[in-house]
Image 1 (tube, rainbow, N blue to C red):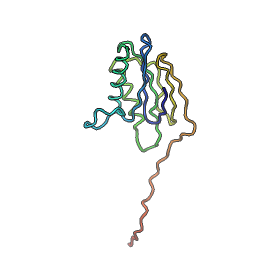
Image 2 (image 1 turned 180 degrees about the vertical axis):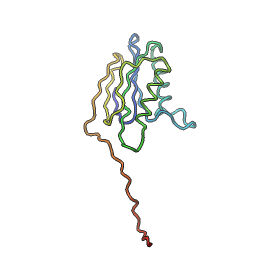
Image 3 (image 1 turned 30 degrees about the vertical axis):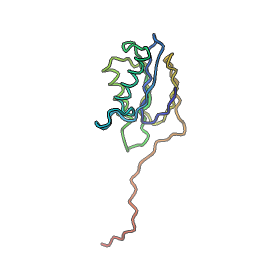
Image 4 (image 1 turned 30 degrees about the horizontal axis):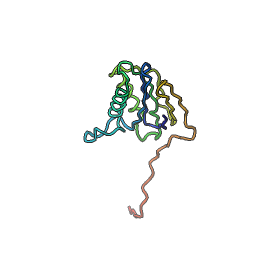
Length: 147
């Protein structure tokens, strides 16, 4: 399985004994309370992944993790990447799931390729993705201002 990440985070989880694994990809740590079923939010994405692996024979106590993403793609505009990285590491710690490896932060997008049965991940930095500098531009209008 594979995904491309900017400020989003992907968690690769697997059970090395059962030989099953999976990956999620989330946009933000939390979402609106009225939409707690959306998988693009961290807590929901993590629970969906863990529950899916359990249905496939994984044992929660044997799960291992590797996490990727959380880049700063829009300098000065948002800190979503950092928040995503902090969220996923604290979630894993709170749930007692060891994080064997991580590649979080930076300014480059990543392509992640995960082999679930083996727990192997390959990361490729996306060379043509660049941080977008946000510079406030004056608002253009047709108004005339007299002083």
